[in-house]
Length: 278
Image 1 (tube, rainbow, N blue to C red):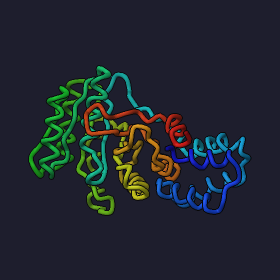
Image 2 (cartoon, rainbow, N blue to C red; image 1 turned 90 degrees about the vertical axis):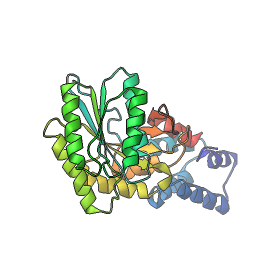
Image 3 (spheres, one colour; image 1 turned 120 degrees about the vertical axis):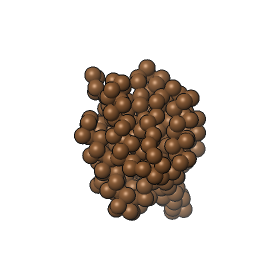
């Protein structure tokens, strides 16, 4: 059942008890909306008329979503460079593989740099995906300089006139400033050859409010332009997308729905709001 459907049905059926409101508040908190946004929703719902509540909730929730462009910034005539960042365990390397397929299916030429040089499994994983999908993957020495791999990657992408260049970075602990500095270095090195057009932060949707902290801290280091939310179900009824956009203004651009290369979807804000309500 959608997050708001039970309260809407009870609201239309008559007055709500104190227990009903307590249950509604608990459901919103458990859905990762956060305390401030939860109180805004409760306040609106308590003051709305039964005939107006759905429209007013739709308006409030829509206003909390980012107004930034959700499309990937593609520049015709030159390589579009995408830096993919995130903490360990969020599904970052798998998301890069899904992006390979997504762009390849659009008949775009893609080159990937495996800049997670300190995790051999990540390099093997992205190389395997590259072979399956038909995308060249640039690798370097084990435990080598990630920025050097990224620079070799952008040079190859430019030489081959690729449409898309993607850098898979190591899973960073956002509380470690030295590691965040390394991401900033990768960006600077790539931009010696070509601009970074997108910095996509991969966030595990099940981590709740911690995802907001990750978004804020990564943005301080590498200027995040969009989010990939992993472990979202097909109807995307979790509240974290709403909470994270409300707090940061960073748009969700993709959602990951599973483990296969095809399980990546563009985030549809209107469908997401409807999924919360109905």
